[in-house]
Image (tube, rainbow, N blue to C red; front, side, top):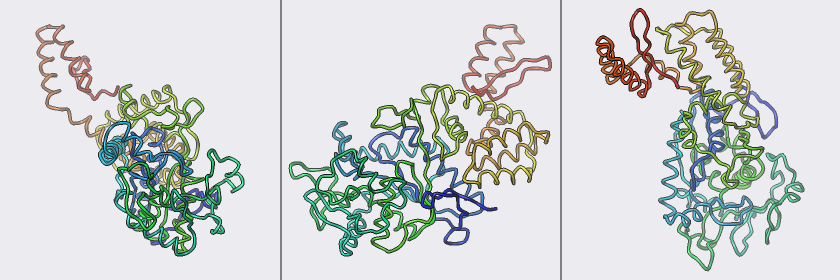
Length: 459
C-alpha cells in the first residue's frame, strides 16, 4: 500500500518514505499546560491520532513523542509579554509546578476520553533545561546568536533559508507584525533564553551562562525531538498556527546547530472555526470537553464530527452539527448492537478503505465507505468484522460498544427480573418505575408478543 501525505515543507502530497524501513519517528507538539485544552486544540490531536493509526495500519512501528510545554511560552509569539504559566499561576494563587501538573493530568484525561493513543514518551520542557542550554551554547559558538538586555536571541539573517516552511515571506512577516520588535536586529529573530526580570523573582528560573532566566518556547521542541528521535526524524506535526513562527524557528535551530534537517515531513491541521473566528483561549471563545459533556455530548461524538472534514480544511463548529453527528454515531452503535456474531472482514472494503486513508488521511471518504458497508447486502457477521478493522483507524470504540451491548450488567438483569414480576402481578406503576431505572442505566426494555427483551440504549 502506498501512503501519501501532504508535506507543508514542499507544499505538495508526497509518497511517504521513512528513514528506517517500517519504523517511524513521530513528534507532535503538545499542550502549553496553563489552562484546559479547548476542542480546537483537541482537533489537532485527533488528526495526529488518525495519522498514527494509519501508520500502524500500514504495518509501521511508530515511536511517538509528545512534549508538554510547562515553561517558556509567552503571551505573545514574538517574545513579549508574560509567561503564560507564571501569569496563570499568579492569578490562581498556585505554584507554577502544581498548576502545570494539574492541567497536564486534565489534558491526558481529555486525550483518553477522545480515544487518542498515548505517546511513547511525554518529555516536559522543565526536564530538559540543561539540554536546552547546551543547544543555545552550540548556536552561540557557531555565531547564530546575540544578547540583549532581556535575553539571548537567534539571528535569522545568518541562516540563508530561514522560513522555508512558512507561506509568508520575510517582508510580509515584517509588515504584519503585531508588536514592536524592540532591540531585535530582525523582525523574525526569536528568543532562545529569556532573562528573569530584575525587579521580581519568577517561580520557574534557572542559572545559565547568560544569567538567571528560562528557555524560549521554540528551543524545547528541538531538544526533545532530537534527543528522543534523532536527526532527522520522519514526521513532525502540529496545528496550522505553528506554520509561520514556531516550526520555522525549530527548523532554524536544528539546521544551524547540527547542519541537518529536523524532520522530513511536516503535517499541519487546520483551525476549528466558531462564529467566523478560530477557537482560542485568548479570544475567550473556547469550549472544552467538559462543556460538551454538560450538554450530553459524548467526547467520541466530537471525534466523529472531526472525521467528517479533512484535517487540512477549516471546520465550522456548530451545536447543530455536533448533535447530528452524535445521533449518527448512536445510530451506528444501535445498528451493530443488534448483530449477533463476528465473522471475517471483507478484503475489498478494507482495500478501498486504505486507498482513502492512505491518500493524505481522507477520513470523509472513508466514513462514506463505512456507511456504504453498513447498508450493504453483506452478512452482518462480515460487516461487523470489517467495521472493527476500519475502527482501528477511526477510533470510535465500535468493538467495545458491541461487546458492552452483549454483556448486560447484573444490576440491570435484577431490575428486569423485578419488572417481569411486577408485570405478572399487574402492578403497572412499579413496572413503569423499574423500566425508567433500567433506562437510567443505559438500557431499554422492549415489550412484544414474544416477551420482553433488554437492549443497550443509545441516547
